[in-house]
Amino acid sequence: LGRAAARLQGVPVSVAQVEIAVQWDHLKQLRSVFQESEGIWTVLDACITGSRGWFWAGHAPSGLRLLVWCQQGTFVASDPYRTLVQLRREQDGEMVPLWMRSLYAVCRTAHGRPAGGA
Image (cartoon, rainbow, N blue to C red; front, top):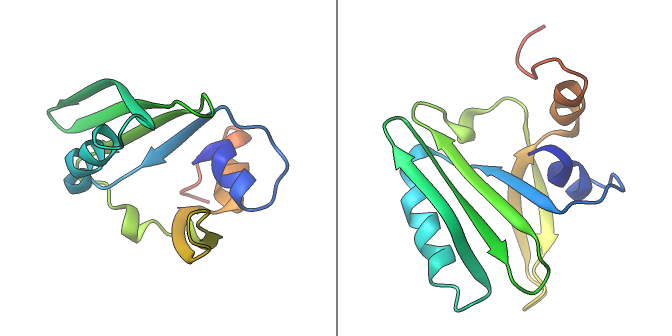
């Protein structure tokens, strides 16, 4: 979302914090992946209650902060403003798909208008 999505789509902006929206049923599993990352990521804070959930994680090598959040009833897979970007994984050079908010949606949100609506 936001600046990170713009950066991954070729806009030259600096990013010290990344925000990721996930579907409700994936949050706990993703949090476990970060907790088991053997010191690369540290889960800094978390809250999963009612119909919302989030956690902060810190990336030790770069100092990057990551906010992962979700809201029950929100389906990332059906977001009409998402776009697919192929990224090369550093470990093995394999191309991996990454869904994110489109640059169009990022720009509309940055200018104070919600991305969904006319």
